[in-house]
Image: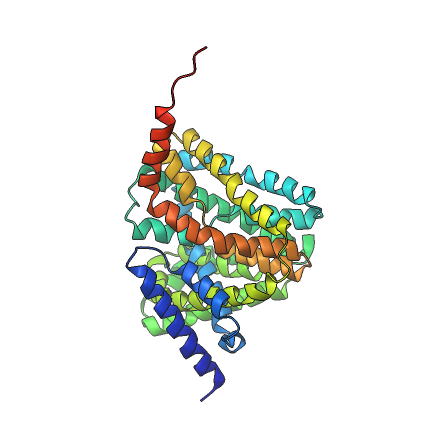
Length: 375
């Protein structure tokens, strides 16, 4: 038997066991995948799992892109935009924080992105699993996460390729893809309606990976290419079909990807310093008041503002992309902070989101019960 099959059997069994443990409590399994890799990294031949983890990341970014069709962008509410302005203040604050810790301009920009962007994938799953999609704060939170992803894509285009040249090539390729989608879209959709699900799945996988490789060859970001493939598919009205077909394959690949990230973090954190821990904690604390103020700007009640701040705690897919990019470009401090944020924020965010009503009652009751100050 090939070693990759043995590695896959062991990894899948461990992941399934961990997911089963947290399923009954209503928590997302992503933190378990990370912790499994962190605890079992030495015993797992993670190198034999490729290319499934890398493919899982591309499919995850493709799925995020599916949420960015023209209908979703037009549906962004003014409340979400207003809250997103406060949320975006984390970028300049994170940039200044990076300069304070001795990073150059590029390193500080990467750190700012890692502090700023929340995980739309984790947030959406938590909101759906906890049946809070109809809550007023959910609309604001999802809108803010959309804006965050758009900002990070621009950041990846600027920093993820060959500098300004890679950014220009990213814009040209994006324009070319969108133009082709506009002119060939109707006939392409009609053609695909007559194809079997199996063939559509294969064509979609080929299109996603091919686009990512094209962007890489052009000196642009691989993740940006996968995201653009999903956005183009959404603009053609193929969102529902691709979500249904890619969902199980994506979930399997993402589980393995988070497992590999957890295993790799063992080596990454061997040189863990107090500066890394301090930056990660500051990054977590920085956004809480900003998102609370953003919720107030969006017209949410005090209770709902607190919920929205809790919902936006988890970091995930884009943090890992930024961490890998920082490591490749010679910024181990940023890579450590980015991965540590993921490891800490996903379980913390899951707990805060799960118990947001209970925490809100405790915190707001304490605030309201304080005696008034006598002038």
